[in-house]
Amino acid sequence: MYIIMVRISKPPQERRKEIVLMSRKLFDEKGFQNTAIDDITNSLNIAKGTFYYYFKSKDDVLDAVVDSMIEKDVASIQEIADSKEIKSTEKLRLIRKILSDRYREHYGFLEHSEIITNMEIRLRWLMGSFESKTPLITAIMEEGVERGEFKTDHPKEMAELALVSVLFLLDPTLFPTPKENYVKRLENFEEVLEKSLGLEKGELHFISGEL
Image (tube, rainbow, N blue to C red; front, side, top):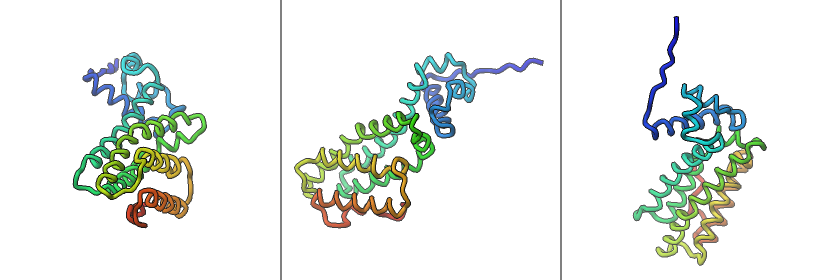
């Protein structure tokens, strides 16, 4: 008795997305270095040639995985940045919460990437996040200055400083620390940012019950 494996043909964009999602799942579970292209293709029941039609290498699909993670953040932040009804201080608070939520969502992926051999994953994630989000945070800083909420002559530099702090120092997987120490870091970050923007103490309200 012969068992015939039927490969289902799918539209190119759907197939590409499927490969990205499966790669992300396997990177979460096994780590990037421990995931082979065969693992990806076998999990999807596709030929290796199909994988190479969309991606040149495992490194190439990693770029797509990281891009998909960052794009989700950017879309959420863009929606907040575009709102005319929300105060600039509230926009910064909402964005801080989005980034905190995303760390928890991506924890498996980021945890594996702490391994020294996987440091390239961390660098792509961090640098990609910094480059894509800086213009959005800068726009919010500039808006806050125009509205009279913020007092700074350097909105872009303030945006960069805030993002570096959130993406690096406040990354609980990059700098592991007990919860109480993490909250203290966040309190200090909030205080420094408030003073730099000419705000009253507690006005940013970064500390909340979801931590």
